[in-house]
Length: 246
Image 1 (cartoon, rainbow, N blue to C red):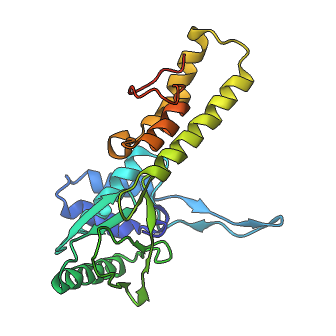
Image 2 (tube, rainbow, N blue to C red):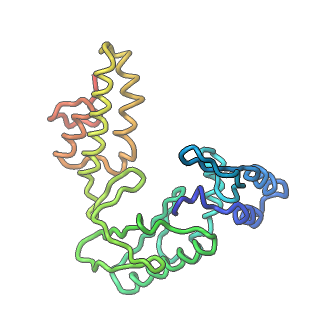
Image 3 (tube, one colour):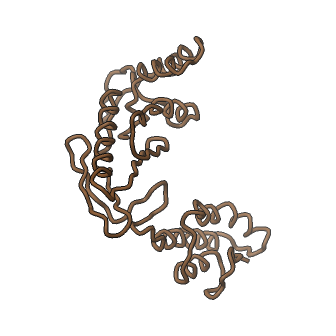
């Protein structure tokens, strides 16, 4: 979705809360929490008048994410293929080994466009991409609304980079690069090399980058494992999982 947190209309959100069967107190409480906000614009020292904010959900709050999930909860109504949603990210997946598979995806794209129009929202069509996975499959073209969607050889999904063959070489390289940069910062900013000093920094700053979604993209060939192992502090010939920093 395009700026979903900022463009979600409060009236539509509250009406969905009521349709979901919330008690009589919750929708008015949510409306009261969203109401009363104002904003103005400052350009080169000149300020506009204060204007009421009639759309948008506070993105920094836990409640804001819950409300967005409620707002998009009926997006998959009537969808034939597989629709995956995480916050304002949406993915549509389906098998396209037949013309019927191609037509099913296009029908679902049309349904998603109608849903967005009905909720006065829109998809960021410039960021929408088609990733064809598998071999010897026809690379059909699809449109969202009146715009054709471009195809892409690889896409980053929730921080994980994957190509059409699910080759994780580049993802391993990116993770290793981030880890090496963090290791460099630790080494340059800390004089002590004592285990009790380095190990907490390693666990807090470096391991999250190496282990994020590692169940999906973990190294499975020698050259990617070597790259990943070096970033963890292991020897280039070390084939053990999790070679230690110290």
